[in-house]
Image 1: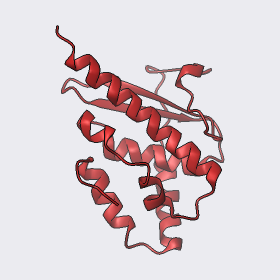
Image 2: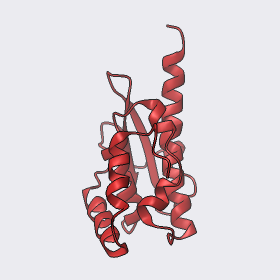
Image 3: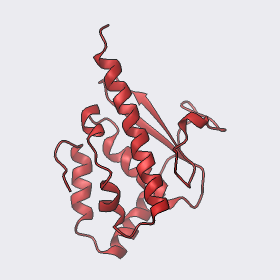
Image 4: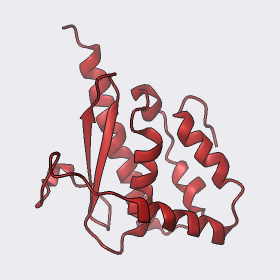
Length: 152
């Protein structure tokens, strides 16, 4: 996996996961799912708007981004399926590792990170949903970078 140019905190986590056996990996992912915090009401309330819903995600995940003073973004997530452990863990991982990261680095994250975190045996449905979450986050990063590049 190429990790050059992506957020350092994500690279560090990928390094940790590379040494884990399957059972340990599952335990870590469950721990991340337990740490998941849904989007605060000051950002969004139910019912969440369809334009924030992640396409292809069976767990009904939603993504928001909040501008930070330093030009980065804070990412917020909601996962409506209470059984959506993979989606919750991935959202918690993204919040933990890329909120506040440079926009260019967020845009460079390859989709392969899903397999590096969840293993090659992840189901196609789950994999598609997680890629959809990453794509949504990256779309926010692209849009913010474009807005910052516009003349004032």
